[in-house]
Image 1 (cartoon, rainbow, N blue to C red):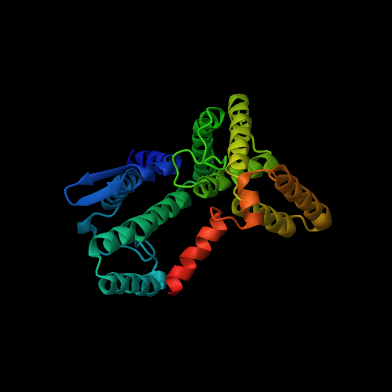
Image 2 (cartoon, one colour):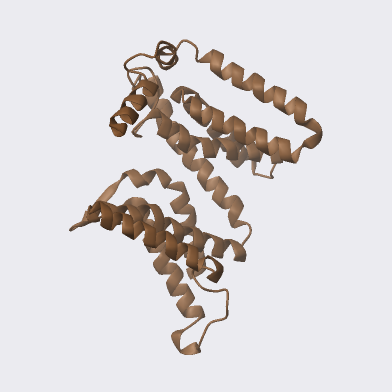
Length: 283
């Protein structure tokens, strides 16, 4: 029963990845929704381990530690470096919060996910579906934003993210998962296949509407690497198709404000803003 709850929590966490933007404060300690879910997962996982290996049962067999012994020293060194940086920075509240949210809890989730995956290989497919439908759910909201005209000043879609690039980075993973599922022709029920196709179309529309060139380049490089390594006899054909696809995306976005700013190096372009920040940091 505990293992079922653990599996469901893993899938819920993957589906609710965007929930990291929702913050909750308990006194002086703040958490986001994702951190609370991972903490709950850890409690369930630890309880399950305690039932399996009670404290009175003597020493456990090797290999069942939270972190494998071969990675223990590198992990200790990483956290020692993090703690030293917090001490040097003297902003303990923000520093410890960053260590908790960016390192400790993601590592705990990764270890628990890997532990569950060793027992149930079908969890991988379920996890990928959870990530995909998370992107599809966000894209439903994105479609509402787009057709309601709720866009940035330069006509880009960002929904509730801080920038269109952040939305693009999040949607890149579900988009690649969608391509992989179609390429592998995995057996799905008719309803799931229809939902999958509709979700993939929405994700593609949202990705296009972000006009995030970095995201598209990352997706295309990933696809090129996958096809290059997996389908060696079709290298030239696949490379040509990817180049055509990239050209179509760029041509389709030629008239947007972002590209015009990039060409003119305008005062409001994101590239110009970054260079101003770098120059300030250099001073």
